[in-house]
Every structure is written in structure tokens, then in C-alpha cells.
Image (cartoon, rainbow, N blue to C red; front, side, top):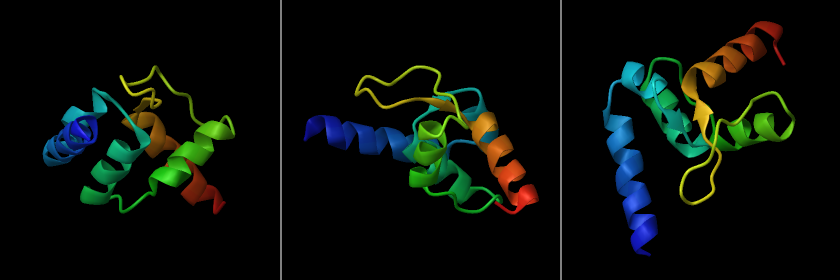
Length: 88
């Protein structure tokens, strides 16, 4: 339970940071989803980010201590913009 509590605190801390600062970090799907939800870009479910990775549309760049894949926020935003443009 301690790891879950620390992970939650960490995620909240990241959400409180500037989105530009978050772009310099590697984030889990959940963290990226929370940051995008706070920004003007609107909500993007973590499940969508994970699905994109499963389908090979998004590349993970390592993993966190719990084994969760880490992604670049810029990569997620670029893919989301492409999906919106295509209407897919």
C-alpha cells in the first residue's frame, strides 16, 4: 500500500507542474493522461495511450520502478493531433 500511496503522491505532484516541464520527462500513461486533462488539450484516457502502444502507434522509452512503460508527452500529443486530423 505504501508504493501505491507514493505513486499517487508522485502523480499528483507531476500534475501540479507546468506542462512544459512534463514534456522533458518520461511519463506513464496515467500521468500523461492527467497532465493532458489539466491542459487546454482536453482529456485523453490512459487506456487510449496504452492501446496505441499495444498497436505499435506509440513507443515506450523505458519503464518506471513498477514496470509501467514510460512515454514522451510530445509523442502522445503528436499522435493525438494526427488522430484528430484524420478523424480516426
